[in-house]
Every structure is written in structure tokens, then in C-alpha cells.
Image 1: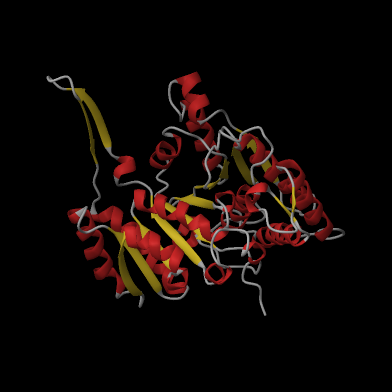
Image 2 (image 1 turned 90 degrees about the vertical axis):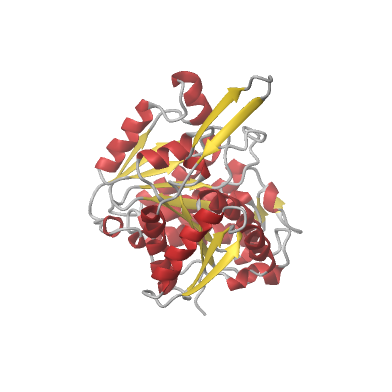
Length: 383
């Protein structure tokens, strides 16, 4: 039987736009690296060591470039979490048809980066590794039924709104936040999600909140119902609170999940319970021209930064996603997954996914074992 977790899978990026499917493997592979803050300074270098192993066994040529600080360190230096220096760095990477490999950055960094480069579509695969079905808090049979791609709209909604704070005459403080969606934004992301669902199990769940956000929910529903017939996809609507519950209680019902910005954030973090830990979550953000940013879903985790306990798997999987999607190198993605799974089968894990009879390793030691297994798989071999 084919192992779906490590089989060569169809790419997601071409569903976003024609520019996302056109990379020539003979071209120079330009990778822009932003290590970020917190645990990013631990997991990003660990993943890049695996890229070095892959580079030693291929004729493909890479140009890996390091960018400046992001998030809170950038704000302390430049007054903003996405500085002009980093904007120029990223623009140069994209101009050379490269991709951005990114660690966590706090404050407004990710939202501003998405808006600046029109990264309207975020894919978050929720594909549990079989070796970790007993590692999380959910029953193994529930986890085993999950094979989901969450699609998130990045450029509208509450995260991209406008806000003010004022001091009222009575001495109280009023905070105001306004946001919107228009049908062009909604239709653009629906086109991606419907085409993706049509290529999979032909089921699309659109997550809304009609009672709480009536006008925006109606806009999304009307657009979805109008467009679904073109793709022969079964369309389902779920309210966000029920969707969070159903994602954990019965993930088998889901194939592709489409969400507005904030709802997508909530669902992706909740969905990491299916993976056993937020340390395994990862995603890619795309625009129609082929620009893409790859990152984990766990954030800076400053409370454990520097203690050598963070799980590097999510960052490694985001590396695989970058190689697969932006550089059309699915074999590299598959080999990284196989090396991770072999390491887990050897009874080695990090603290967050500890299981009975498992030897708990720190970040560096676990990544080193994955590197050792990847190197062994590539002995006397070119890919």
C-alpha cells in the first residue's frame, strides 16, 4: 500500500496562479532566510543543515541569503516589525524567483509582510504522521482519519483592519477596530479552494459566523454558492465555533477547509492537535505571481527559547514544502519526511511529543539524528 504521508504528492502552489507552477529545476534556487526571534534561532539553522545535506547530493544550485531582524527585535531597532531593510531583502529574493524561508516574527510582522507582497493565500496541511498517532491528546483512530488542507484568506478581515484608541470625556478609553471584505477578495480565495477541492475528495467546508458577522458571512456564502457549481464540489457551511469542535471530534468529514483571516488562524492552531503538537505545524503563504513564504505555525515560543527543547519538525516540514512548491523538488520533500519518520520509529522524540518507551532528545540532538538518517538515505545517490 502506498504511504500517503511520504508519497510524492501533487503541488498546492499551482492552484494559486500560473506563476506558481513555472519554476525550472535547472535555474538557480534563491532562498531568503529570516531566522526571526525566540525559537526561530534554533529551528531555522537546524532545518538549513538538512538543506546542506540535500545540496551535497544534487546538481541543483542554491543561493542561500540571510536577511535582517524581524518582529520585536526589528521594532526595537527600526521602530517597525517589518523594516524597510527587510522589505528590500524580500523584494530582491522574489525578483530572482526565489522563496522566503522564515522563522517566527512577532507584533505586526506577518500581517504586514502578507499585505506588502499580496500573499493572499495560506495553505496549512493537516496530515498527521502515523508514528505520532499516540503522542497527542486525541484517540489514535480519530487522528488516523485526518487528511486536510486548510486554506486561509490573508488580506482581509479583522487582522487587516484599521484601529484607533481614544480617551473619552468621562475618562474611559474606547478602542475601535474596523474591517471589511469585498467580493473580489472573496472570489479570489474561493477560486483557489474550489479548484483544490475538485482535485481531491470534492468537499469544501466554508467557515463563517452568520449570526455574529451577518453581512460578511452572507457575502462569503453568496459567492461560494454561485461559484461551487463550476467545480462539481460539494459545499458545506459551518459556523466557526462548531467547526473548531468538529475538526477535533470528526476530522474525517473534512477535505479542504476555507476560512476568512481570523477564523483560519484559530482553525489552524486547533488543527495542530491532530498532529500531536504545535511544533509540527507548518504552512506556505502565496501570491498569484509565484512569491511564497514558508513558516511554522508555533510562533516564537519565547518561554522556551534557548532551552534546547523546541521541536524542529515543523520547520523541517516547512523546508520540504518550500522545496516541493517553490522549487518543484518533490523528491526532497519526500526524503525529509522519510528521515523524520525513521527517527521517530527509532524511538527518538522531543519533549512535546514524548511517548512511552521514547527517548526524549533536545532540539539539536533530535535534528542531528534526522540529519544522520537523511545522509544515510542519500549515500552514493544523486537526486
